[in-house]
Amino acid sequence: MSTINRRNLLKTGAGVSAGMYFGAAHAQAAISLNMTSWGAPAEVDAFNQLIAKYKDVKPNVSIRLDIVPSGQYYQQLDTRLAGKQGPDLFRAQYQQIGRYAQSAAAIDVSKYLDAGFGDAFMPSVWQAVSYQGRIHALPHHTDTFALFYNADVLEKLGVEPPKSIDKSWSWAEFIRVAKLMKEKSGFNYPFAMAWQNANAYRWLMYLYQHGGTLLDASLKAPAINNKAGIESIAWTQSWFTEGLVPPNTSLKSTEPTQNLFATGKIGLLLNGDWQIPFIQDQAKFKWGVTYMPRDVAMASDLGGNALAISRDTKNAEAAADFLKFMVNEENMRAFVVKAQLLPVRKSMVEKGVSYDLRPSEMKVFLEQSKTVPEHLVSTVVLPTWGRFNAKLADELELAFTSGQAADATAANIEKHARAMLTT
Image (tube, rainbow, N blue to C red; front, side, top):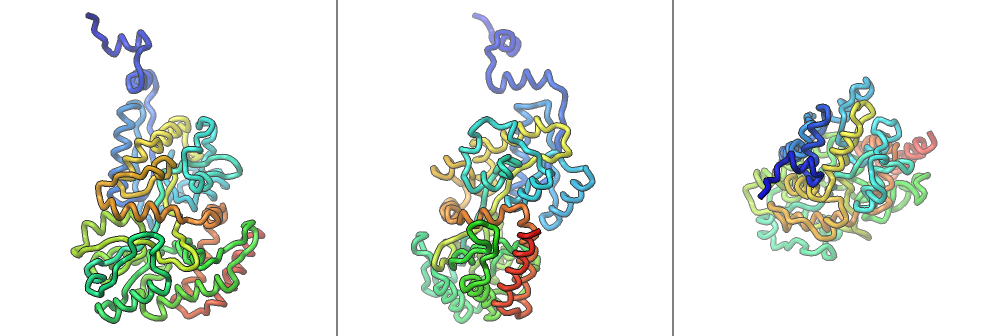
């Protein structure tokens, strides 16, 4: 009886998969890559586990993960790229990929992908990583918003949260519950919205819920200075003027709203699925997650991130191989389950994912992720979105904290949008 060992496998060509990888890798020179990201502890753990797994199949490739605080992330990344000292790989929100593609800071990875590679991904995220018909990053995961609630408080008030998306609260019902919490449960402020650090794009979902859009169908002209736009601004402005949200939770603040919820200072929280591990660990009361409130339509936020290769890398082929490894179905599943995020492969979205932590709540987020409007996606992935977002944050901040009228705010946003669309 012959013994089959690694030498025999290589000699006969019978080795497959990891065995062939192992042999090939040892014939190659050592490669060192560095990747920069931000991330909650669960995300960092998930990245490190997959980097270790990749080392098993590609032992000649070492990957160092650099974690940067989220508030400083893009400033540091842009500084490194401007100095031609960018990392080999970097993580970026879908809303940022367009500008990195336009400036060629994120390289075109199309030549490393098989024909039809993008067919496996949700169209919205594949659109987000595409620029002028070329692919400048690979979709890694998504996340979206839903409504966290203090179940103990709602139970005492006799309020039952919606159990299905078609029964989600209307805007009026949501405000009624919030005011009931303020009046009967002793909250100074009943809820908060996570749009701090100038994440103004998250406000857009309310505009779409009310039937409005920021830009017209062609994405070439502003479309906010109308009844839907003004009323959407006025509604979210009323959260502040009526004392329903803490005044320090506007767009330009840095207040971590998840802390307010987990410590019981507010009873409702509009935030994302990635907060589940933190709230699970910190909250000392019974809580749950239900769907976003709706108006004439349902809409939620396009969240999530892609992985890109910088123009400063000297090992683009090796970096591309790692990106494909990270987004294959097995490894995407491992990442999203560990980090409490949502997949972007069609098959995983259709079949669902089994989460170890709070599976019922993650089911709500997965269902909610299907309500992100296509036009909203097209808007926020424009290469110029970064400039849009900054002006949108400026104007909404004036409305929320300085009393700028809703109609004046809409007119100013329209003016900024028109200027940026023509430059």
